[in-house]
Length: 186
Image (cartoon, rainbow, N blue to C red; front, side, top):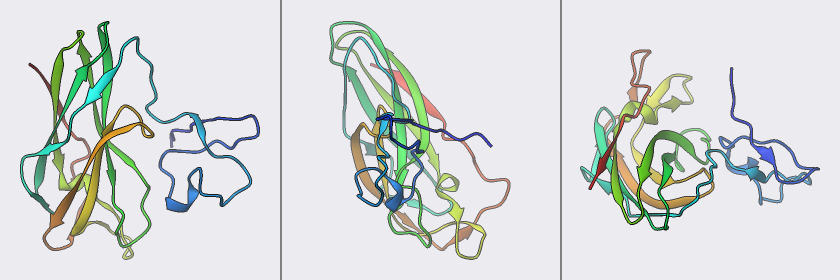
């Protein structure tokens, strides 16, 4: 199985993954080995800069068997044209079991001229929130999740909390595994 391993920031550092549990990250003083990444997951450089707007949602909540449209705006605030990888992450701080601090849900490449903006829309299926619960079954349960947008796992520019409602639902092998994205230039 392929895993994303980040490059350590120092020679004595330890390779880590962005999908670490709450007590497995850098800056937590749980280990004498530095776990900070030189290039965090999703890191990339450009010859320009980008500004992110707040996240907007197509509904106030997400049912455990539903879908939510998430929109985020990105603007080229520099003087050159460039491309940005708009990344959408999930955090589930109150789950049955420990979950990763951040999990990549989807991404979209956005190419912009100076001062140009675009809106990225994601269609997030509740299936993408599924995790293996205490019963060892993949489930989607009610609660609050945090959705974040940024240019890497460590460069989060916008975040918002969303309530997931409904009964706990078991998901099977036919679950939705992708988060489609659409870029609208305007």
